[in-house]
Length: 325
Image 1 (spheres, one colour):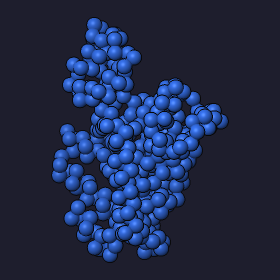
Image 2: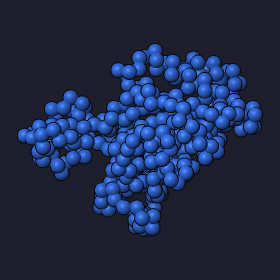
Image 3: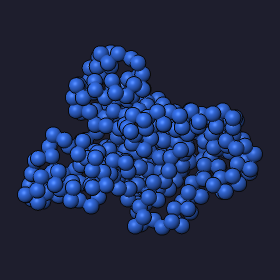
Image 4: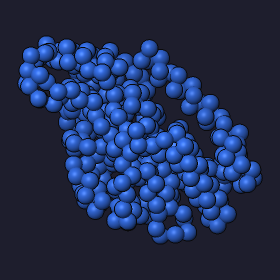
């Protein structure tokens, strides 16, 4: 935080970072619509999705799904939100109706992408250059257990060191299959949501950074004019396909609120490595935002307005958390 204050003083504006991504509301401080931002992504890279607006008719939403040829399963998630709050895989129309009746907020309904792997890639590019930098890759390891041929799914969950940490969530997710006995050595994936709160582990994947991957993201960045800094979360089957810009789907595009989440891999990133990474990202954010402001006349958002938005986000987040309590 002291370094962030130093950069604010250097920029002569407390909300200097608000000029980093002019295509996204407040450069992506968490108050932006995820539905709007995902539609900045080229069509070939984004999942099909619709928006269920707060207080709207569920029958209208079902018609939208039909018109967009969206079928179950779907991923439902708040249009504004993060850290996996209320994100759920929906497998039937009845389940969707229950979900929408329970959570009366703007909800994105997105096609479920069945690719095996998920990762977060942090990219930044100075507006004056053609080449950017990938500074973080986070590989997401979904929570799995292995069958022994005799124990039920419930017994396996209760006896697994990591699964036990999420026992309430997992017992609810798998309530219809708890008595099933997985075959010996059968691997059961317990969650499909790539977030810590759902049991997913974040692994440092920075060894996968390459110039070819950066070139792919250079092209992607240029196809989204006004996006220069943030993390893209995506699903894929083979990382070489991501590297070559071929077969992957972008789940979310994040802005200035994004973190280089590889730092949460405690086995492959020390505390001091994490501090160094955070400082480096703040420096990059400063350079991009001030360049946009000074050379491209992108205005900084007023500090008062920016703070007001953050208080609104805080109140909204509390509202969402009350749904889960």
